[in-house]
Image 1 (tube, rainbow, N blue to C red):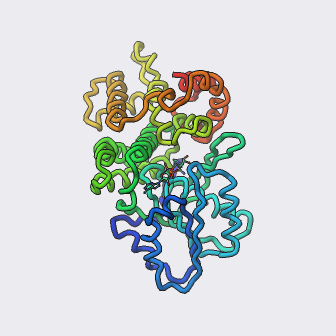
Image 2: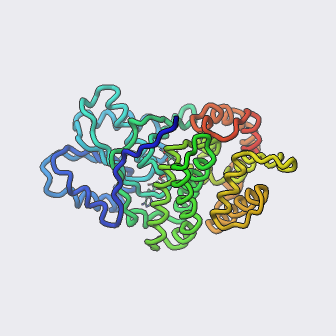
Image 3: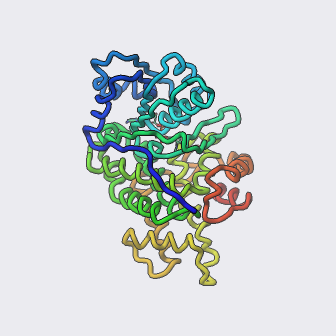
Length: 377
Ligand code: NAD
């Protein structure tokens, strides 16, 4: 039996932040990162808090790939305030940290009543505003752990495209490729359904159409809005269907190679598609279910695909063209990782990827050696 429900209420549009004006009677704990705090973006939220009598506290210690220590600091601060609402205002790192801070505070009985979590993404990438996932980093072990629990789901999400206008081109490209990877992995997951396919297909189409525009001109508000929506749609898709080994390897290697999450996903994407599609079996005219799904995607994207083999090839070619338009690196070497480093670390990364939560829903069960080969190639 499969199921799908979406408990997160979504507000969208340029005036969506006005939702915050309705919060009048609660203590509010606002979690953000130092960049957002200094950039003036926080003022957009603070302007909607005027005239309130209740306590309000800002915690702005979030760093990319949030470590366990930051979550622990947040839990200590939350205790005194006892908030009715937590606002997570920032990129995926901020929202993930806020989810973990809330969850730990409840599970450790530090908070007696459950505060409402309102997620306001300022990047268009992770979809974490609508997912049961939070990715926290163990810096000592150099590992990123996805925590998965429905208790992490935000109660509300605010999608305001004007908040992502300031995202610089490189981060726009990285986070946009994260969206594409979410959509594609959810589409071929063993838990994919007609419902997750609907969200994934729309997200993938929007990314191919609008991400290059958002990358080239950050002020293009129509493109920004479409990519922001794609991020959320892909989040809904993978929250239903799960992800796959592209993300498992990205989680396991991200903390080793210090490459932004979306860029690491992009580096792996076409190789993982070739592995999942079983292209070596194509000569026998044996097409895996994944190959058929990739080919269907190629067709939806308007790429000619008279058979599975050409469909998969065309999809990968289309992804490579997108990566080129976004000036994305196509090898670990271009990201400053040496071949010796890869040889040295590939076993430990593959071992961690094999037991990552996302591997369970991959359309093909990988062996340890398969993962090593993907990293090396
Ligand atoms: P991020 O939150 O780490 O932010 C990246 C950088 O962008 C930061 O320096 C931040 O200050 C800056 N930034 C954020 N908003 C900005 C804006 N509007 N203008 C200019 N700069 C801005 O990046 P991310 O890609 O959103 O999140 C990545 C994290 O999310 C990783 O830890 C990844 O593992 C995790 N993740 C979680 C899920 C999930 O479902 N929970 C899914 C995918 C990824």
